[in-house]
Amino acid sequence: MDKRERPARIADVHAIARGMPHVTNAAGPRGNAIYQVGGKSFVFFRTPRPDAVDPRTGERYPDVIVFWVPSESDKQALVQDPDAPFFTTSHFDGHPSVLVRACRLHEITLGELTEIIQDAWLSQASRKRAADWLAAHRLPPLA
Image (cartoon, rainbow, N blue to C red; front, side):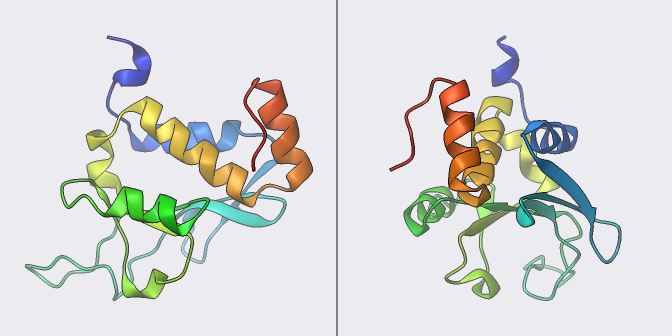
């Protein structure tokens, strides 16, 4: 099996996010990891909040990860499939991000996670940093 096709893991989120250029890792209010580029968050581990709860027990999810996305259409593409691990809450209405529970990361591949984090980084990086990264990876420039 190609490594990129194996199930994603929590450690992969940290490794991929840290591996992007110009990234800082800030600690949130409860020590939760927040990955930023140019002072802008692109991936963070959210603390339990009242808007993300188990529908059966009402318990707050303790393992929510937030990923920025390039656009509302990208967000909808990720959250519209009810079987996909991605979701959103009303708290994030109009916000260019998606949520996923860490316990469901295995439902996506390492390759998919890599693309999601790269897109998150690109959505928050400066135009120059994004252009430089895309050029270095021989990818087309952003529109």
